[in-house]
Image (cartoon, rainbow, N blue to C red; front, side):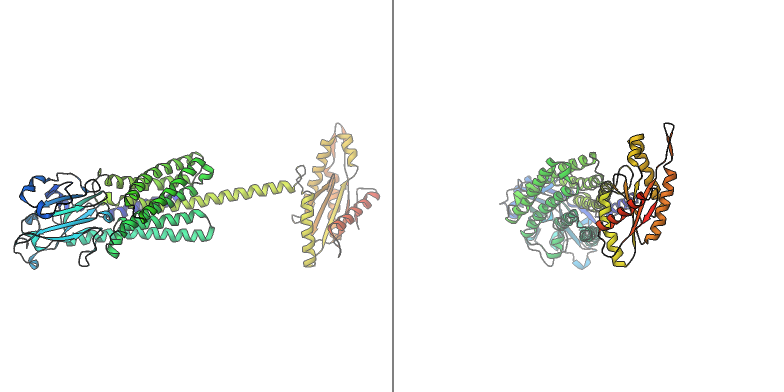
Length: 585
């Protein structure tokens, strides 16, 4: 059944992945999308002090060259770069060109800048030529307060003003203190809105799933008090908030908050690593599985917290480096730990490894995009989120399997405890209860009988001349006779009656809710049954054993000692009457 659910879950997420927007520039969308990189010239790693007047001067034209498939990026070692392009009016549709009126245009066009990390792309400056000379400047970026009139987007976009359609070069200056790769395109407003809707639907499903997993885990935590559920909740909350900032949803809802957005990105990155590691330690039970991996991952969890601290005190470079390298190290260590536990026969580790593999695969694609090995597109920019969605659901399943595993371990432990308790209360030879059991359970039976006003009877019995049997035929035969007596008692009594070995060859049977006259009849049945049961031939000699029985009923002031003493006295009266008989006292 679980495998069936996993199959449907996999299909669901494949469909979910299809909802995320594809690469914004593609040949199939030429009427709605123009890949700006294909029509732009690129001035990479420019002097940050250069302004638009210097860059747009004729003598600087030689420093620009076609992008020609190069990754467009900026960062610590290339803090500023420029792009120069002229809007291809022929591809925009009717109503575009010098002197055209906005109402004559077929559709509104936008310039869309889609960074790999929207929160850490510091600034994008868009320079549009004026008719009288010079340029109008428009700014967006993580270090720029949001313009309330700008289109709401997870990325950065500009509505193309009239000056952009003059068939004169426009310029983009991109700058960032942290490495960020980007994709740039001209898109129509309807296409932009469609992609936004798909994006919000996809991430709405992702966040909905993560909230559902948190609520579900909270319910299980309150029900079963299993600490791994608490760590799973912290892990999901941290990873959800990290994605919330990473993918620009904080910017959509609250607008750009310079400095704060980037700080929160690294704070939640640190918490994501910390609680993911703590959850791994708890879920895989590494204290038992591997003390070495336990201490290494515990140290990694501590370093993860340092990432959050570094972000709060605004050591962004340290937070960036620690999160990237620690994320890689933890991914490897967790994989090793899961494989080790699988080899040790720990079943839930299989589901955990599957869940973790999705996160690692998504993180790898996302990291390769950040390292400029893969381009920025719908899949690479959302790979980590897709991996997180798979990981969250499969981890929930792994937790369910882990809980079943713990329940099974608990039942096995209880069964072993019951088994050992039975051994401690049972005579190994006859299978009857021992003296310890007799003293515990007879006290309870006496208490219940008095509280309920019900009778309680006790039979004490002893094999006649048992020492002679042992001396004449050996202890093995004597043991066999005792086993036969135990069988006779079980045959002639009820399941609610208790037969116990009192000492040597003396046995006691106590019978709740039985009057002593009825107990006398039961004693006689035991006696006659055993007389037949004990008959056997040993080395050509016939052997038959008998038993003497004493019967008493619970009296008002009886204690365990007085009750058993009276039963013992009744049994010795039976022996004094010639043995092989029953006497009620």
